[in-house]
Image 1 (tube, protein in one colour):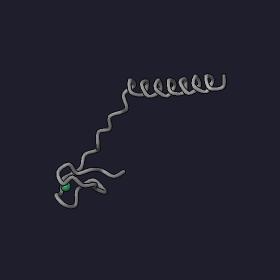
Image 2: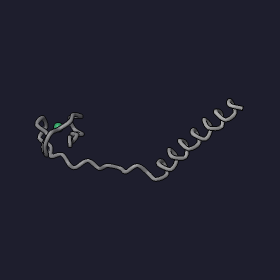
Image 3: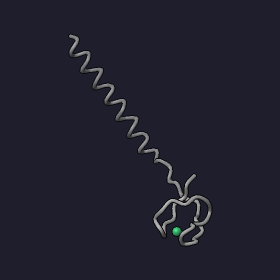
Amino acid sequence: MTKWCEHCDRPVDGDRCEVCGNEIAEPVREPVPWRWRFFIVATVIYVIWRIYQLVSWLSH
Ligand SMILES: [Zn+2]
């Protein structure tokens, strides 16, 4: 996985930046919050429901 040097603002292959010599720490990855996943799922279900309603309304 490519790491990122905050100092040079460039991707770094390996543990050390070739430009500034900084040791690159493992990037902290924030997991997607559950609220967001729930919101996305709810939005998808809502859109599908609306499309279903539209199709059933058009077919009548
Ligand atoms: Zn650097």
